[in-house]
Image 1 (cartoon, rainbow, N blue to C red):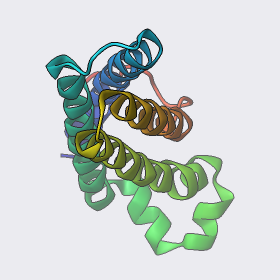
Image 2: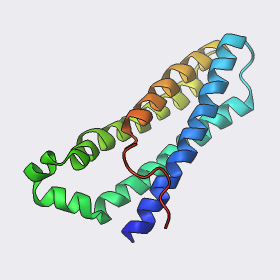
Image 3: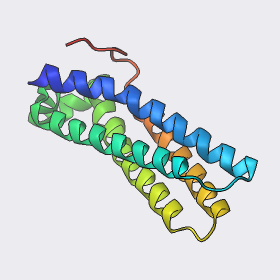
Image 4: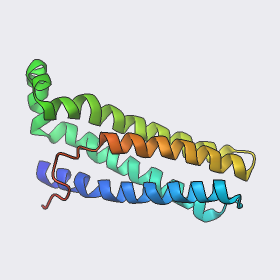
Length: 148
């Protein structure tokens, strides 16, 4: 089960990154283009948020089926000696959780904003923070495209 979940988690990262770029571009084009908030802007943010949620669920599942996490739980001190495990435990997981929080603050903030300008400002700010957290959280040293 571990290889399947890891492969899905690996491939989904590219969908999350793509949807993040789309949501960011729409937010900044709306902000600097001073245009009206459109349904496609809301959809871009919603799809970005959903994709991160699904990715995070697969990541949580990985915590329970990963032999790496099992090894880290068995010997936390030894896990901190391994660069890969230390990065997963101290960077990847916390930053991924932070990205989930940021994207939801952005989508909710845009939805509740009083006018279009505030919607774009909130989307641009929180989606930028989300994408930055994701780019730092992604373990770039692991295979970029994992095959099943």
